[in-house]
Image (cartoon, rainbow, N blue to C red; front, side, top):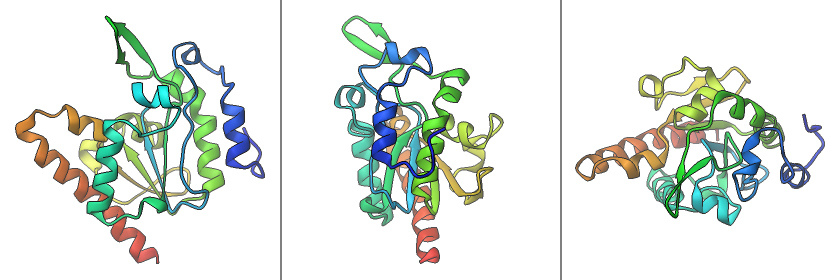
Length: 201
């Protein structure tokens, strides 16, 4: 575990050489979190995607662009948000010239937990937002169901308030006829976060 006095920059430098699970052999590079050190909100996704893996930055692909749009609509300042993932390497399998996303397993998520815990410890956010089931279950336990408790302000086991919602990539995979409603639901969940931040001052 990284010492509390470490900076995010120091921890990031440490994470770049991470070999705690076999995913480092698959990913191009470690993709650590990004955002202000004193962010009021940490948003946690599953893992970097193809574009994030190549860029070395989280949420820069299509899902990240959708998240940025939803934050504006929900009234959350982007400079209040730090974005990261439960797993810091891209897990994929080849499909011709494409790299297809693969869901990380419990061992891979556990191996990466040290980095996530350190981010939470150093930033001390007012709220944590879990984007999708992988992040939510990593933080709240494997029995947690986003579909049942999304959009609620909950107390997390690690002493922070947490709101769970869908991952923006799931909206992009939604059939076009249902996508608008899925996006509206996502924005509604983020508005819960915005209200909680306003109440906190």
